[in-house]
Length: 268
Image 1 (cartoon, one colour):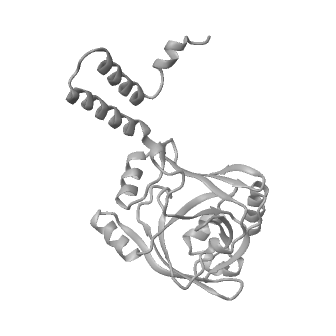
Image 2 (image 1 turned 90 degrees about the horizontal axis):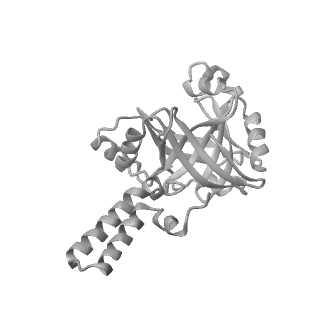
Image 3 (image 1 turned 180 degrees about the horizontal axis):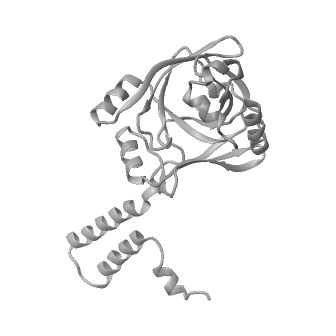
């Protein structure tokens, strides 16, 4: 059943209706300018509150990359190619961490890292939490993400001032297939809300960002978090300067909507 036109006009954003009411009152009966401005201000405040998650960017401004975990790198590459139409290239190995990766660009300064155990570091894998987690993955899935900063030391101080505990503050590197070495510094949060909050990375100025020469053809359209601890995730993110959409859900899940050569698809 179709609602009458006058009923349709009364529906919509509460902020719009409040502002409309203020205008109608101003026209139909004399009210003070102060009262009118008060109603208009209330309408704009309501509008900002009503926006909620819509105020957040579709992708965080400081998004660097997402990690797609797999128990086998070749399988992870094939899995991603089936969905995106793009073939990730081998990136290199992480010495001492028992892992290796392949990369796919998601646009300027954004990329996807497929990460899996490195068979050549099998002796390292037994005592490595990340490698053991990857071995247990049955189907490739998102296991984390990284946010970039140009001043990791200042971010460490900001976290300390906010009472946010960090861990694994370290220098990292890997040798690319062309022999060049990528270098970076990073730290993780001691409590990352089940992998929903990122680790933070500062790339060395001499290093080429992985998105620059990884295979192109894919674009990250939307990235957001689902979590049962919405307020906590939002609070910690805000204290660290992150703007990320967080939705309430029963379980923590990362969502990435990507436009690839075969159209749009979503991975979690």
